[in-house]
Image (cartoon, rainbow, N blue to C red; front, side, top):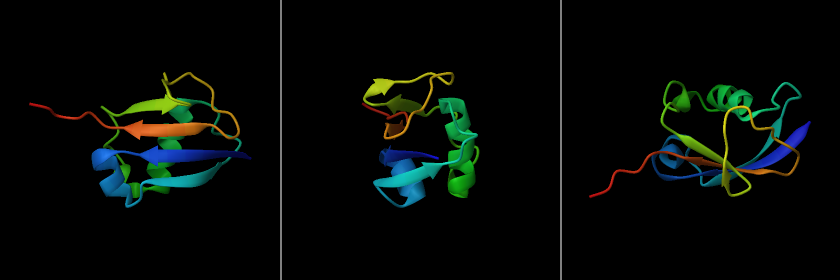
Length: 83
């Protein structure tokens, strides 16, 4: 099992109800795309709401095919409107 720390920002933080959490990922979650699917199962309030969200792994923006390793820090960053 892979253990990661997940950081939530802005609207995603509000939907999840916390700023960060430790998550034990099942063996089937190896890439960022897998993580996105798993996160929506873990937090049903996120289902269908992660389309414009960016993910960073260890402070670098990640693509869906990027691998997730034990002790990684994953940031979930929604788009932010500005003015």
